[in-house]
Every structure is written in C-alpha cells, then in structure tokens.
Length: 395
Image (cartoon, rainbow, N blue to C red; front, side, top):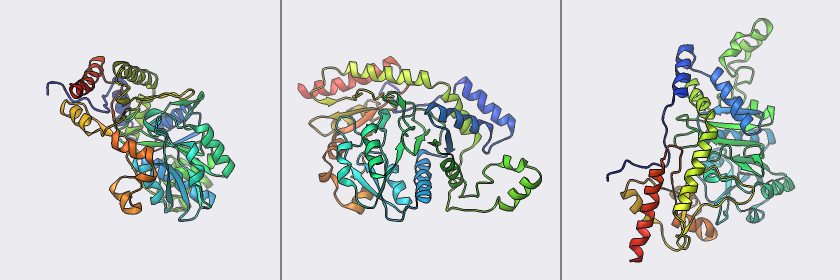
C-alpha cells in the first residue's frame, strides 16, 4: 500500500485547542470548572436547549437520561423502551443497565432511522419511552414520532450522538425530546477524546442528570466551587455534601476534555461545511453506480451533517467490497448492527427475519469516512477504488 490509511475519523490539535489546554494547566484546575461551564452553555445554546451536562461519554449521557426519567416518572423495572433495530449497541445496552426492556422497531430502508409507521405495532401497556436515533448525521423523522409519543403519553430521548448541529424542519436536533444525548468521542463530529453531553430544557431534569453522573450525590454539592459558600449556606453544604440520594455513577469528565470541546465547538461551522462538501464529492464521484449501491439521502426538511458516509449494496453481500477497500488502506465499519450481535442473539434468538430492513443493512451496509480532515485527493482515491471494484466484477 502506497497511501496512508484513510480512516473513518481523525483529530489534530489546532492552535485554539493547544491554547485552551495550556490555560487549563495554568489554572491548576482539573475537575469541573470554567471551561466545562462554558462548553455546556455554548453546546446547549447551539441545540436550542437551556441546559447541557458534560459527562464522560455519549453512552453515559444515554444512561443517566433514562435513569433520570425512570426516577422522576416512577417507571418500574421491566418497563419497555422502543429503540431502532439499527443503531450502536449503547442505545439498547443502557436500557438493560437501567433494568428496563428494549423493544426493537425496524428502520426505514432509505434513511436507516426508526420507521414511524412501524412504532404502533411495538407498543404494549408497559411501553414508557422511545429513543429515536439520528444516525450517521441524519435526523430521524421527528414530527410523526413526537406526535405518536404525545398521543400515547410516552417520553422521548433523542440519541443524537452522531448528529450534533443537524436540523429537522429548521429546528436543531436535541430540542425535541425530554432529554437529548450527544457524543464527543474520537471520530465524532466534535472530538474531546472521551466525552458526551445530555441536554434538556427542564431545569429539574438537568439537576438530576448532574447528580446521577456524580454518584447520585445530593444536589446541594455537585462541584468543588460549592465549598466557597459562607455562613449558614456553607454549614448546610457541609452537613449534606456526603449524602447520596440516588444510585448514581462516576461519569464525570475533566477540564481538559471541556477545553478541547470548546475549541472544537468554535469551529463547528467549518467542520459542518467540510463534511457536507466531502459527502457531496463522494456522491458525485459514485454517480453511475446507483444500480448496485444505495448512497445517502437527505429527505426534505432533514439536514444531514455527515458524521459518516453510509453505503449499502443493493443485491449482494458487502464483504467483497469491504475487503477490497481495506486492502487498499480505506477503513470501513458496519452500519451499526444491533439485533444480530452475539449478545442479543443469546437474549432473543434470531430476530433478523422479523426486521427485514435491519437484516438487509446488516448484510450489505457499511460506511466510510467523510470527515473534515480528508482532502479532495483522499476522496478521489476512495471513489476510484470503489469504481475499480465494480469494474473488475463486470469484466
């Protein structure tokens, strides 16, 4: 191989990231502090939310989001949550970790997001919530999903880990459900190394989320700055700061991750433009292969931010093309297989016959990168390799 590996994601420290990290070091403050507060406030505002809580992963954000709603809504162990049949395993795993039951809904064959027409059939008297996933940068079809949830008295948690800053009918994702969750892990839209956020417009839920990521601590003491109180307030804090009101977790992040997040957030416009440009170049370059490949779509009113670039083969298994690309230095990943995972097969058996869209995507779908650090030459190389594969098959 003569080219460097073309990955599905990448990260490089820029001047702003380095400057902010130096400021953290100079402050001698590692735990939750000014950079975390600035990052949370700016991120929440960018998504039309009043509050955001910065934790150590998108998975943790999903976990405390469901835990907060379970506590405040009085849900019971064994109650059910609807999740799409195609998503990263964390979406369903957190339901189990909260002692609830994930119930799968098949996805739309063109967008790979939860199909609103199939939700009704999956509801039972124990259904309490649904978690639509904005997959690979494309918003789920939120209008019918929200209307359905309101009509049934169900809560909505948006899994927006792969689609920060995307819009649905002119409104930012993350502002529809009771809580929305985002990831800032490596290869995501904004990268902090590890990290995630839970956003909400409900002040009481925000307090509960922050408590749950701090071991379930009494909300009177959730950061070391609370020690700066004086008089009667200080005495009250001292009396309660080692009290725990919920079964919480240690899901906190540090000022270092927040500094990276704030620096990346300031570049969100350029990141978005570059990803959309690279996706457009891939789509234009692959024109003429529509008979064998299904490329990403962008339905009216749904803005795709292209965290990833999905490809599904229409009539054959993906493995030949995947191997061809990997052998030539182009990284691929499967499109979020869930119901065919070994752990879920042990729990449920063979579910795929009941979810035909997921079965097709599991068999024939994968994604490549379209991130902002790819050059036009990288995109051109990817296009040529895909075309070469099909040219070889047609000879």
